[in-house]
Image (cartoon, rainbow, N blue to C red; front, side):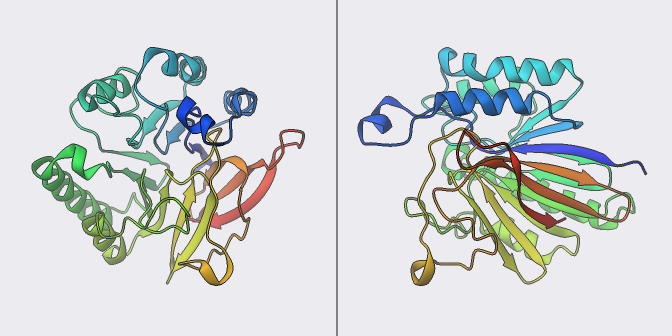
Length: 281
């Protein structure tokens, strides 16, 4: 199998006016630079980790539509985990905006995408927005797809993808493990599930849970967040990039018998983008 590639893009939302008024980072110039770099990335799939926009409104989509158009023109498929900002203020309209751009399927908010023998299972972590009936349908779908992947010789590894992370050291956000418990149980039980990717927290974190890896990569232009560090940290961060973390994205490389991901980005816009962390899939 020839090497296959994908990119994974963290939160790209702009800083809201109310956030700027309370001192949150405002970095439109950094976001524009990141979009220029992403437009030239090689890969068959661009996977967004949610909060593509600050909220569902035409002027917010106008900021990222040129990037999506350039990726499509180069033959790059698009997919996204649904973020809480993407479906605000009217969830059905936000989902329709994502679907029109090919980021989610027409009739549901979860999906799977294969890059070589790595399968990305992209889930909707907005449980309250979905409602319990749709949530139960998603959980049933997940269990069926994990079982099918476990039985398939064409799938070597599974990567779970959600917007909200089950674990984080964020100062502002708490762990979502309880809300996402059916996902967590499926992840822990699967012999092929090796990595869980999330956004939401505008920072970079990498945790090891036994042989499995959780990565939070939530700032590809969004205002960066502080993390609990040292003795205050809830979980041991194996990356140790600190906070505020880098503006960055992930490059995924898939070969026949192995796959890996590299975090690429910069802390200061005057720096060249470089590899800041790597992990196996």
